[in-house]
Image 1 (tube, rainbow, N blue to C red):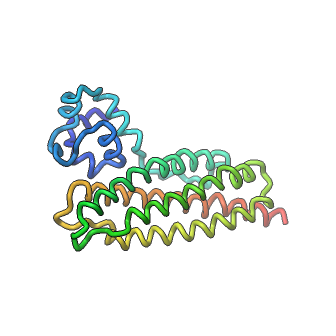
Image 2: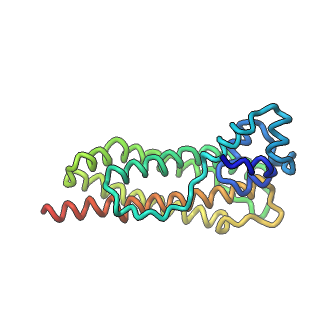
Image 3: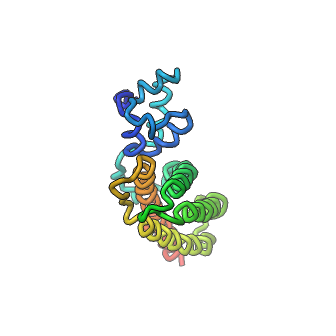
Length: 226
């Protein structure tokens, strides 16, 4: 457990630590008005367990992954995708939507206001959730059963949907000016854009892992058997 987080200021956590805003919001720790307060001070003031807070924060963290997943079997790869990406996306979107709604409301008259961002995120959440459920309920069980031929039709559909997800990511970059907040951006605005960058990175990695390794392996296996 990284106890050094206890000395981070709430504003620093919100802006620079993935997923921190959700944890702080849940425990009613105000990273805007009390942004210069350390996590330890804020926890003590509200009689919160500092170790439990840090544990909640660190569960969102992942180390840089330089694993060559092409060397792992499909069972292991699918388990990794489900845990690392499907679970993570389901954690990310509710908080991103909450932050986006707040930023749009508070900055409606600002020239750089990312108008339409919350709606885009809602659409992305719905389409990605539908996509992941199809994989979990249909495609992945077929792949795990070893019947590659049966996987080709749903796999093709998943590739098409991933192209739509890529288009959504491009639109996300456009609305946020490449995730660059204005100089006078609030802590919430800065936190939102950094968390959007993490979503963008995670979803790109997710799509690449599936399309370039898992799906390509299934297609290659089918051609080998043809």
